[in-house]
Length: 279
Image (cartoon, rainbow, N blue to C red; front, side):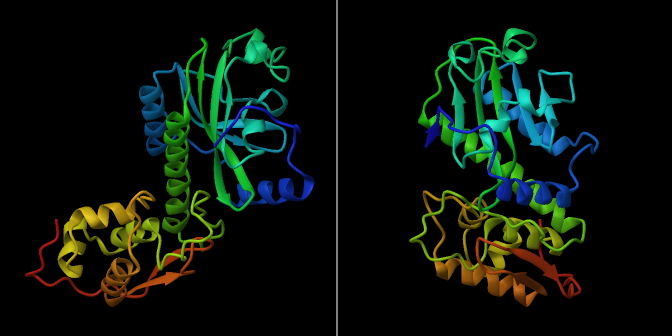
């Protein structure tokens, strides 16, 4: 679902304090440029054919760009940030024409450089009602933006949060900020493990998708779909169980077997069999 209007300029104070705490614990602000995040903004810029794409983090009084294409500044004051409104919702926020929008017509980023006319932002959701920023695209001209475009931008934003979560694991920290999939229906049974957990476990073990396929008897495509958390073709409980058995047998421990608080630890890494084929 796409939001095109807003009813308040700031998140409620309780959720704002929780949001800022999560942002601080992730330790992303004012960090050097990162090729992984840069590639996501480059992909968004190309896919939507826009001059500007950003990964924006909303701090207490500023927005800071973790990655950017088409802009040279590192951030803006928070009161000027379109992304400040994006974090009010779990859905994609779209401003079709900033010059005709009551909240943005006089914004310095609209009346001056970069002369924003169109904006679409997908929130970076790290926990229920906890949105630390957005992946956004900006154009200086009017443009069409449909529901399929919104879904694609939201999926790219999920890639950003997946990358953030994986880096938290790789740093040796506990999964302090939960990985959260907002589009999952509440009526669905909680998955045994998430796709991000599978990817992280494979990385810890040094296993390829083909290697995991051989150990589980599942096709590589099945594993790829599972790792992508593809909601149009969700993995069955039996598929997840086979993957869990193989990874746990190699020393992986899954922490938090639900979408609210997943994690991965490697208790021991068995010696590699010289006859074992891993690509």
